[in-house]
Image 1 (spheres, one colour):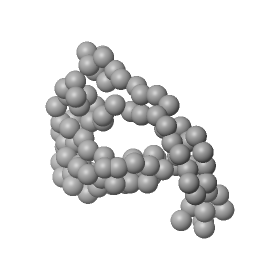
Image 2 (cartoon, helix red, strand yellow):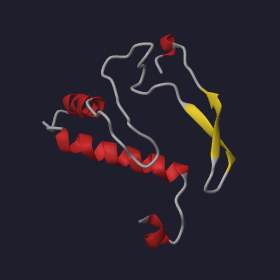
Image 3 (cartoon, one colour):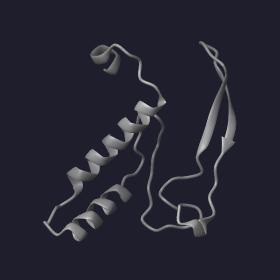
Length: 107
């Protein structure tokens, strides 16, 4: 779609943003807005948290959680950076690094 419209092949950043917008669209459609800003923010937050098994361009399945815990702090699991060690048809990958956060940091 992007290549046809803009003449460029999208990268990883585009894929992540597209996934974000798709998840937000799903949550917005589920949210019943009342006109009370605080209540509407909570309702939208809950709709995002209720997202399960979303499969997007960048990754999947994406799941969120309502209650923070060391296993599920902000709805995401431990991020992993993937390194492509060989490209082409028979590509190979390796885990270049992982990022973990102290649960008390609120991340």
